[in-house]
Length: 392
Image (tube, rainbow, N blue to C red; front, side, top):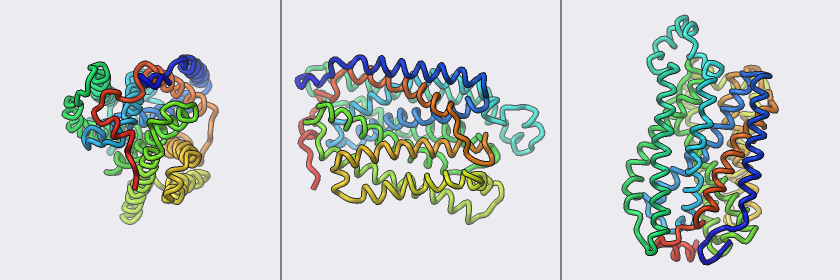
């Protein structure tokens, strides 16, 4: 890293490797489509939602930074901005889901809807055309918000002086409201409607908790990876990693609180059309996956990150970030796959190929942005205060 302009040089091959791996993964996934289209589309949806949740999480954290006027996160903000810049590519990668709508969502079949009174009443909302329009709308809003925030940040870099990001701050307040609405309904559309008879009013909040955990874990791991190679090691200090550890700990508790609230209220009411969703996830090996998620995404991170020294230990933070990302993938798998494999979990090689395909494109786009501009907002008026931040 050039310490004068905070740019990475000589790292272009990483983007090429990511693109190559992504292309291989997508090619294998296309072959998988001809082997089993049902398995392909479900595996592809899991992979896509995993990476979209990270990208949209980057959008949320960027707007949260501007709204709160936080100082400590100034040195990390550009990282969030690079993550959210991947959204246009994920928009393109979502197109196969629209073509596979009949393989994923039983409400898209007219004969099924006609024979089911409940689906018939929901058909004004749950139909293929409106589903596609809503999906396009979600991405358009996210991309426009993200592009504006990113461009404002880069404009400040090139201004040659410390220019407050007033436009970004003004946009972020209504932007967070738009984000909350669109992400909630996207969660309903893409995940909850896989079982259109079931509903949960806090399902969107549940998915949001996992998304925020995922982007924090991804950011922490990548920053530590860069640090190990001498990049930003004097800018993003142990104090910043301590704060990231506190956020991981916080959202681990938040996710668990929402997950338990959703489960407990449905279990307590004991209404058949509500409990059936959890019953499907307590059959066969799904019971094991359910317990793995409960302990893996809450208990293990909770007892690890509650210790102050662990939040300041780079090895522990790196391992915990990877662990949370793995558990987040299991969480999305747990939400999607019982729709296909009713009696128990059946892992497929397409789970790997689709993850590699979408993830390779994600990492290629992310890395291209990462090396194209300074790694930190060089003209932010609070940059030096952020570098010197201390935890007491």
